[in-house]
Image (cartoon, rainbow, N blue to C red; front, side):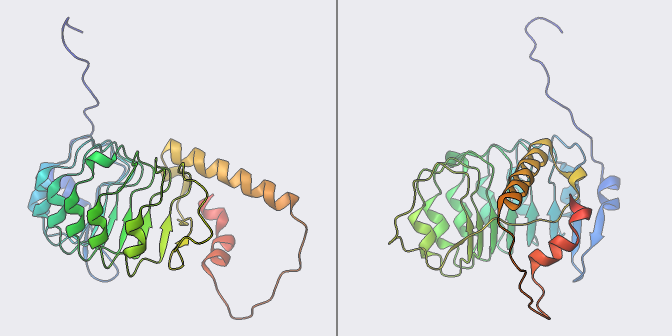
Length: 255
């Protein structure tokens, strides 16, 4: 390496328009989905601007460090997934995606200072996942997300539960596990919020190494709890099917 030159970062896979077009899929409800996940992409492929009319965009599990300002060109987006990248900054223009109802930014390098107030302009947003970042507090504009139903804040640096959360009228689920939070007071007004872990049935081979290790550790912990717990007679609820019962039946597929 020549003296004075910085070591170049990963170039990543180059995405051409042809590759992008071949990655177009149709969802069950007839929407156009551009799936460029897990393809080793290090730079947002500008060529996909020619496909800016897609309804869903998946760039998860890549090496992206930046979301470009021109993300606002994707005006039809209702579903946007950037989880498991290296994103350090969210552009102000993210607030222009008025149709967006799902936004996943989990497992990146976002901090509180890099969350723009414009995120509060996403009036139709229902699911927001900010888990596994470096967030210490949320922008006050989050309180404007009146349609928000699920909020992921797990594995961050929150030292206090944001008061704005209890002001969200439709919020049903918020996950703040593995944050340096103090024990909540008994009289804390969180009746409308359930602290839950989201369960995703995925192929383990598709997980990044940190996620895979975290799943393994959690699975080992649960197995220890089960082995030490006294046996109880299983209740019989005939005709009742729950997500957990389905997960148990199919656990061999996703472990």
